[in-house]
Every structure is written in structure tokens, then in C-alpha cells.
Image 1 (spheres, rainbow, N blue to C red):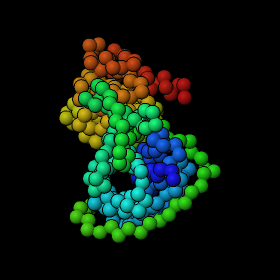
Image 2: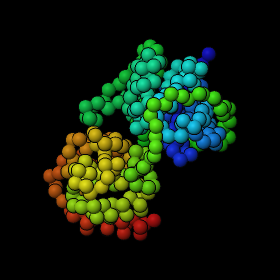
Image 3: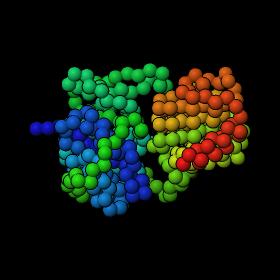
Image 4: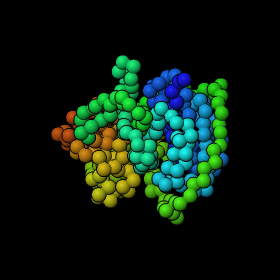
Length: 323
């Protein structure tokens, strides 16, 4: 009998987040022959999301619809997912290392009396076992974790394991499961999203981040314009957030979001170790700073020394000219 791996999906505004498809690809890397079972929770009709997950590699999908799953609570989603896990008795569970994943998975692991490998950025083969690669010491080193016994429970960092190709010829069952989600002690009255509209920062392929060097809130305007022409998102260092140039929802770093985009443009950021911990694994890093001794240049693939208010408009003009 082949192994079974559950992938816990995340949806926002009726659409599955890209990290869910990456989690399916991760499950395939753990065991290419395993049956991949998706689990999606929410208050709306989830049939279309379930079918989309099939297209991206899941073999079948369980949807759990309940009014108490309209907004995320660890109690509600924990009850729903645990019911599916207990019924399926999987050999593995995979979820994105997102704000929800970081909150939900430790609680599930405790209830399942299981270990948990968190924030994996790659999965390698060590003989006949998967080895999970994860950063330690604020990204300055990496370790490999091999699970030798029990449930394989892992969260993966977004933008590190590419999703499988979408294939509309794939078919599989999307089954609605009834779960009585009760005893919710946390009541969500309202959800106010302070993050900028458009591309989600944690899943963006391109990020333009500003630091104290942007000088004020208006200094972020050219960064938004550059991010817009690149189809990316805007982030910030803690220094910029502390100076009230932008909202803390944009903060990248050890105490903010950890991101791994294809392109990270650091604008007016000195490169404190706390900030580097949140973005140093980006595939390509471009630093723009008028201080040639800034620490950010030590990890940058490309560096531009100069005034960001002269450089950014020229970059925008050049990018627009080749589009």
C-alpha cells in the first residue's frame, strides 16, 4: 500500500494561495509515489478550489465548509483539519510556513503527538529517506533534518519549492466532509488588512524594500512605482517602520516577514543582521545605497552606489522602455 500525504491548503478571498501548490510539489518530493490528499477549509463553496488543487498535482481533495471557518482561528481550523487527519491516517502532512501555518501546525503536532520540521527551504534525498533543509542562526547556516520514525510533518517556506505544472487533464475526487466546528472561544469581529493591495508580500517574486534612507513616507512613492512596473510588492526594514514611514505590515526581517523572492531590491537599507535574516536567501539581491560601506553590499549580487531618488526614476524609465 502506497503512502498517503495530506496537504493543508490556504485560501484567501476564494482563491488558493500559491504556497498550497508549492506544498503539493513538496509532498511529491517527499515521496513521488504517495497519494496526495488536499484539505481545504472555509465558509464558502470550495469545489472550484478543490478542482484547482487537483490540476496542480493532488490526487483527491477533502473540502470542509462551515460558518465558523469564515475567518481563521486555530480552534476552528484545528478541529476541521484534525477530523480529516484522523479519518485519513496519513503518513505525512505538509503546509506552508505562513502566518497561519506557523500558528496551526504546532498545535496539530501536539495533538497528534508528532514532531514537526518547520520552515523547510528544500527537500533532498538521503538514501531512501527525504532530508529537509532548513535555515538556522538567522539564515547564516543550514541544517538537514531526517525523520526516522512516526509522522512526517513539515512546513515549507514560500517561494522555495516550485509548484508542479498546472494540468487540466488531471482528474480526482473532490469530496465535501461535514465537521461540526464548535466551542470557538475566539470570535473574529472584523478583519482589517493594512498590507498594500496587489501582490502578497510573502509570495511575491519581486520585492522592492525601503529603509531609513528613503527619508520619509513620501520616499516610498517611487518604490511603489518601481514595484508596480516589475509586478512586485513593496517591503520595508524595521528602521523604516519604526520611523513611521510605512506600516509594520511591510516589515521584513527577523521580527517581520521572511521572504525569498526571485529579485529583492534593497533601497536605502544599511543591512542590519536582523533584516538580512528575513531576505538573505533571495535568489538575486540588488542594493541601492549612497554609502559604499553599507553592510547590504556584502550579500548583494549587484550594487549601485548613489542617491536612490536619482537612481529609482532612471530604473523605472529604463524598465518601461523595454516593456
